[in-house]
Length: 251
Image (cartoon, rainbow, N blue to C red; front, top):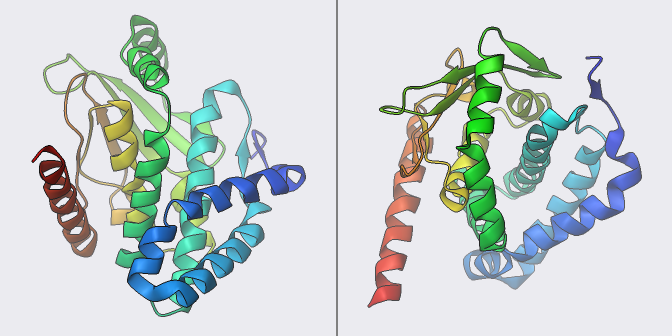
């Protein structure tokens, strides 16, 4: 793709590895609790090596409008590295994603509230709506991504995006993460919760559907489901666990 650069992160490898180490630090307590100190250490070391191998393969999409897509690609690579390391040690995709979800949730919680507020305001601003309206006439390509923008009336959703092709999905499948790809899509749960996107989504390419149906509604709760049964069961289990934790904090 002319608007996509291969090997872009070669000169940034050290910085990305440092960020990955910080990401893994967020899951350290859970790793040790579940698997013991020795296996937790081995899993982190193996995941780091997997990530170092993946860094040179992460595509970079050119253009300011692709900034968010590049962020998501980096998250995908991090989670794929964790999955591949855990798979080598006989752990399931569900276990890998639960750890990734927890680390991502803790990570985005560190984003200052004012910044999250500002990003939420921008998402549902008149400026963003006009941008979507200007792009809604045709599909738009960003590297391995092909998207269709939608503008809603507000009753069901405000803004929407259909991903007809997804670079995250392609990256995961290309690098041995096909069974984990539906879980990677669920990373949007933690992001939507933290940023107040009000994301509603019922299907993804990784579920075997013909597109991912992103719908954003101001003031709505995150409502993300999967058509892959094991993924949906994991979502419900984690949601129930987090709800109990919130109740316990208020008691």
